[in-house]
Length: 315
Image: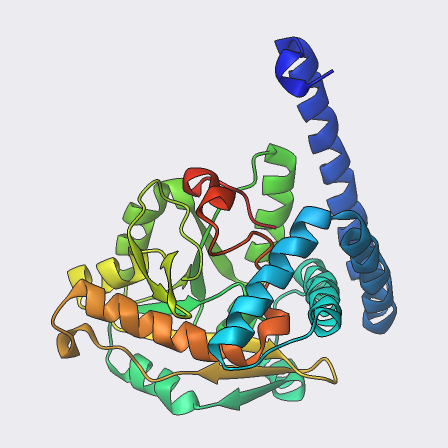
């Protein structure tokens, strides 16, 4: 029977079953990631990712569409076989990302020195030297969650704006893991006040700049086509005068990481909020274009219908 004809109680029971299943899956992932050795946990994560890749036809098609567009923008023509291989790698990298999310904790400076290489740390030092709040922008690229733990170990505790999970149990689990890495969590629905207060305290605030969850449809050019990109980072920077620091934690072939900072975007150097926004987009294009197999976007990014008015959920 089509879902739209199901009685409300049946639909509610079906949704409850789905949430219970998701919660148990996340609990299992949490257990595996924290108990098993990292290499073995990665192996499990890869097998689960392969299973999802085979089952999730919609996500698989979306990832291939996104990859094709990014590669076309860079002047690279990929065969169907190459896109298939790259899309599977995206799913596999996301499996590793989940292992790191649940398995990571507060990092010491010694651990950061062992597993993370820094590139252009002078941009971070420039931001700190200004003596004001800093807006860190990143993307669903590499390992943005672990990046918060790395910044904490470098002496920059982070306030992270996140989209809360609908299920309160999953929400509590995710929040506990984030806060164990010294991240203060600011729920998206209450972000404005929390972000402004953190910046007023001269703290770092992290925002994901590659997905717009608002109901607005104010598009800018991204990889050569109009795309829905969040206004928040640029708008807050223009309003507060706080600089924007683009930073990306990227996975290396040996599963160590590279934390790369890009030049500071100081709002006084731009004539409008839109200019700041476009500058952020150009940085995202370079970073995502250089590592498209680490961009975790499981919706057809340039397809307006896939966004459901900006309220779709992202893994």
